[in-house]
Image 1 (cartoon, rainbow, N blue to C red):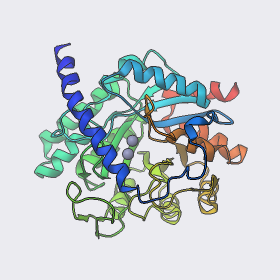
Image 2: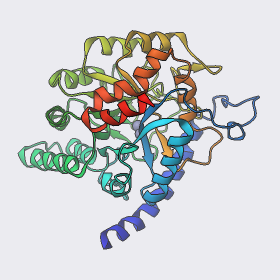
Image 3: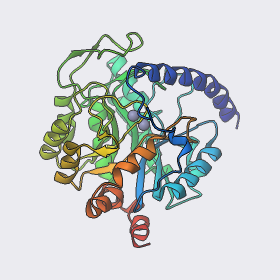
Image 4: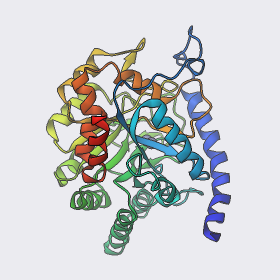
Amino acid sequence: MRRLQGKFATSMVFSGIGIAALLAAGFVFAAQPPSSAGKPPAAAMPPVPALTPYVEAHTHYNEKDPQGSVRAALAGLKRQNAAMIFMLAPPDTYTHPGHYDAEVILPEAKKYPGKLAVLGGGGTLNAMIMQSVATGDAGPAVRKKFSARAEQLLREGVIGFGEMAAEHFDGGTPYQYAPPDHPLYLLLADIAAQHGVPIVLHMEAVPQDMALPAGLKSPPNPPRLHANIAAFERLLDHNPRAKIIWAHAGSDNTGFRTPALCARLLAAHPNLYMEIKTDPLAKGMNYPMENGKIKPEWLALFTKFPDRFIIGTDQHYPEPNAPEQRWQTAVDLFNQLPAGLRKKIGTENVAHIYGKSVAAYLLHAAKN
Ligand SMILES: [Zn+2]
Ligand SMILES: [Zn+2]
C-alpha cells in the first residue's frame, strides 16, 4: 500500500504535467478548422452506437482512479455497443515521474472477464527500451531483465504488449524514439511470438530522416527525426510469427502515414496489423473522414486488406470533457463499412490476432 500511496502522490504531479502537455498539443492543431464548425456541439447530440459489436482495442485509463476508469469503460461498452474494451498503459520513460503500468488497472479490469482486458509494458518494457537507447546498453543483463519483466506481465494476465513506442511526440508523456529494430524490440517480437500475443506500436511514419514537422515544438521534440520505415520492416521480418499492430492508422502527424504506405507494408508483411484511430479534435494529416464520410482511398485500403484492421481509438476513460470523443468518430466510420467488412474489423480480426484470450468471448458476442 505504501508503494501505491507514493505512486498516487507522484501521479498527481504527473497528471498536472500531462494536462498541460495535452493542452499544448491541442494548441498545435488549433490552426485547423474545428470539425464541429457550423454544427451544434457533438456533446449535445445523443451518442450513436456501433451497428454491430466491435472491440475497442486501444484505450487509456486514469491511473489514479482505476475503479472510476473501469466504471466509465463499462458504461462506454454498453453505450457504444462494444463487445470488449482493451486498456493500455501509455508508452513512457523511467525518467518521467509517475510512469505506470498494467498492475494499476489489472485487479479492477479482471473483475470483468470478457468485457475488459489489459495490455502491458508501456510504463516498463517501453521505458527499458528508451533507457537502452540512451545508454547504448542492450547486453545480456539488460536482455535478461527485459525478458523477465515481459514474462511477469504475461503471468499477471496481460493479453499483449503495449503501448510501445518507436517515434512518439511529446504530449501526455515525453518525446520518445527507438529504432523499431532495436535489439530489445527484436527480443520482444520473439517473446510475443512464443506466447501468441501481439505488440501494439506507436510510430509516426518517417520514411527518410527529416526535420520536425511544422507545428510541433522543439524542444521538447528534437529538431530532426530518424527514418524508421526500413527498420520497422526489419522488425516485421525478424520473426514472422510475431503479430505487430501498428497503432493509429488515420492519425498521422508527419504526413507520411498514407493509405499507399499502409498498403505497401501490409502487402509485404503478413504479420502486420493496424488499429484505426480518428481524433476529431486533432485530425492531423491523412485523416480518413471528410464531411462525416470515409474517404474513398481509406475505404479501398480496408477493403483490400479486410483481415488486417481493427478499431483502436485511443479513447480515454473516464472520457475527457471535450465536445467530441474519439470513439464516436471511429464508430461513425465503422458504421459506414459494408456488413462483412464491419464484422471482420469489429470482432473477427481481433479474435484472430489476440487468439484464445479473447476469441471465445467474441464468438459469443457475434452470435448475440
Ligand atoms: Zn499512441
Ligand atoms: Zn494510445
